[in-house]
Length: 179
Image 1 (cartoon, rainbow, N blue to C red):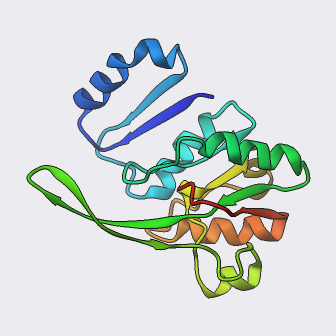
Image 2 (image 1 turned 120 degrees about the vertical axis):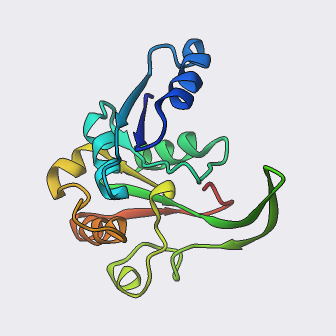
């Protein structure tokens, strides 16, 4: 694995300090891309990271999202078992929080899964539940269908997912929420 941190308009110092403090654990597998002034959209920032990727799979991990500890192992195993699938979407839940005295206080959780617990064009036309944090995509697919549209200021991942599901089968990995 490797991680590409796209610092989209944030301060350089805290990001560089974080990466440097974990340099031994990253073992040369971390790259930072600083974008002074920001790209203007999640889509453009995601493209910067995904286009630098070198592995077989890509996932966009926003700074306000989290994974279960075994997310990558489970998702990679699902795609390894189904080589014809273009991506895998994990069961996801929304965690409602508030910040109090600099700490996160969890208020509750709610499932956020495709209506039929499968990823179909029909379901995607109704609602977007396959968010980037929960979607592991084969890297080659970006070259085949294109990247996120940086002109979109929102829902670029939804537009990408509509193209993705037209291109091939997207697995739904149920069970416990992973994202």
